[in-house]
Length: 65
Image 1 (tube, rainbow, N blue to C red):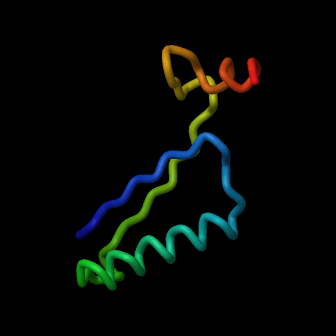
Image 2: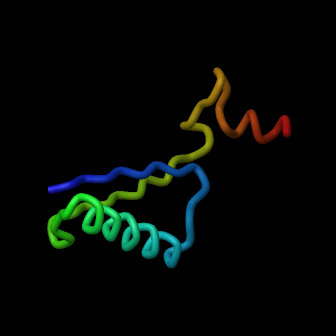
C-alpha cells in the first residue's frame, strides 16, 4: 500500500488538490503497477511560519523579497 505525503506552504485550491491526488495515484499505477484502491495521498498545508529555509521561516524570506 503506497503512502505519499505532500507538504505545501501555499494552499492549493480544492480542484488543484483533486488533480494532484489523481495524477500522483496515476503515476504509481502506471510506473509501479500499484493498486489505486490502496494508494494513499495526503496533502499537508503548512503555515509559512512553520517552514524554514536557510535558517529563516518562509514568512521572513517572503517579507524580504
